[in-house]
Image (cartoon, rainbow, N blue to C red; front, top):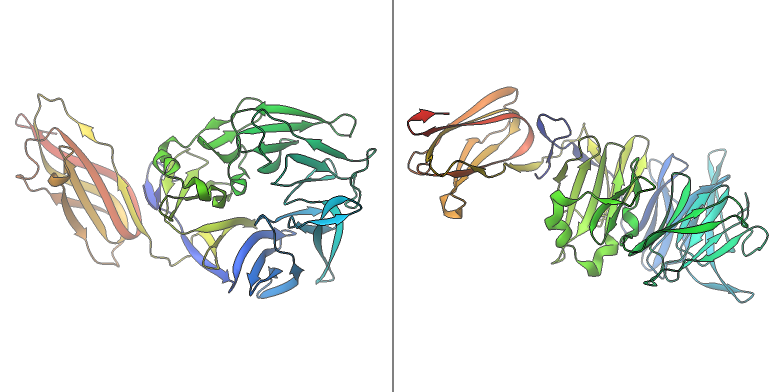
Length: 435
């Protein structure tokens, strides 16, 4: 299915459209949300990286360092949002990094920078502490209790090397179900305990990990991209692979660009943008209600962020879209194919007519393929003009010479515009009986 989903089961409906919310002229290196109120981005223009936020227009927070790993991360801690970029600043023989902060006082942004955190490009918070990790080593650092400036203190902090059989550096960190999960590409571990003397890093798996840091999303279960596909983790038992329906896109991932994969959720759906071989991208969406996957389009989304009840996607072209917007005027191209139906070989059938019950605005094309032979396809354009809507039956009589003496057939529907398909039925004859 492309751009059409079973979220509204038992009907199939085109996805909600997208609306361009805003855009940036430079390259978007990171996107998140400040204090639940503003979209923010790190934008690179002319070699300069700026941390900016959107409040009816883009406003600068401050110039920040360019990340050597291409990664940024941000948390909200106590009274401020803190951004890290992984640049290296050595102080007292210790590799540290710039951390940038912003807080809003009387409607104005107050910002600054500090050098106190260990070198890191991943941030989380757990039990009143900042957790920091760097994608070029296998260490996890925890800061002081309720204090962003305390690090490397044996009495109120922790530096933990996460040892696994396959080595590897960290790929992502995420707090889930009260525990910090430390991912490597092919393993993960969980941190238990509340104080430095009680912390324990427990291995979860030495074979399942996260290969794309930007795909780790809490959807009730924790979803992430592993080397086996999209995994779902509920805690306790091992993660389960849930991406079998989109296996062809999983197998076609360009592993040299896999870290560019990105995912997000609006609480009802999980969308993941997968880099494909040949330089293209594909967006696959999972209904968290029905468990069904459908394919959207090939827009390269780099980041997703939730603001209010809406999910926003930052595309590689600098545009930021409000996804699944019911008020969008986007013209959507969609398609759906049935399974291949097989009839007992002794019962040669003749296809006579197909009926589609739907509410369609735009165009509808029907394609029938029989005998699993590409040459036996025939396409029927039922509705070729826009402006017709309302639940109707679209009926097509099939050419008897094309659809006689066949024992298999497959139905494909496609169109441009909005569509809701409620029922598809086929009339056929076999041994002088009509079915």
